[in-house]
Length: 121
Image (cartoon, rainbow, N blue to C red; front, side):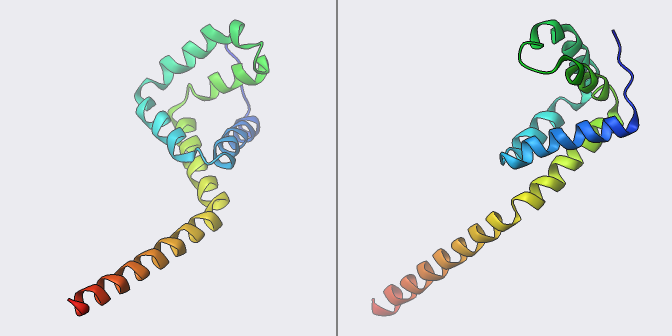
């Protein structure tokens, strides 16, 4: 059974999916996975329809079928990728900044040790 999904519902489900990946710091792996199977998005959505009777024990069957319908469209796949990327940047900006500062301190310390060793030799 093919499900029709409104634009508002499409945006809501894409937002929910993107948030799921971004909050768990899995934005990059999710984007990589989706990008690698982008040419096969239609087959993927059809596989989701095929698996829906088995997956209903784990997921809400209506949402699962709606997501399969959403992934049927190339436009929606691109939107999902972009939204995951945006939310990943937004949610993890503070942590990335901390890591960047940490790396800078490490390299600054390492360079100063190297200069001392070079000037001492």
